[in-house]
Length: 199
Image (cartoon, rainbow, N blue to C red; front, side, top):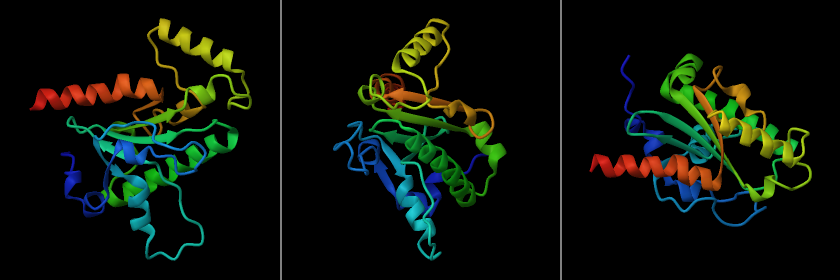
């Protein structure tokens, strides 16, 4: 089945933005943006607002920050979290995933099987706030997270933090948790390289 052209979907076309803008801290906990990348994305928070505008809801659904569709047609939901990843914040990320998937599938006319084969999820987190702060999620101290990441890297396996690996294979093809630097070095640099090669 040929994948539809997302640029033709009106609600996506009307809500284009950049990674920089979608990474801006909306909680006010840490001012500023988590990346300065001007790569064009779909602002999924705004998509959600358009989607629910006439529904008269008492509770607003959650949504991920950005939806990026690569030249290779890979689809990425990206969520930026600039504060300490306490249990309440992680629970909020889980809710954002569920609500965003439902909204996305309704808009594009697909199902979870499609997402499992074509969608990826990235959480970008503040390394400084989640390396030595008390109260980090997973009921583990920061040294355990550092050691786990080191062992996974040595084994050439990715390390997914904050229990988000539970969404891999059931809702997404793959799930990644990146620090801001990893997001720049691993993800954004590849997009930049792809864009240069396509010129």
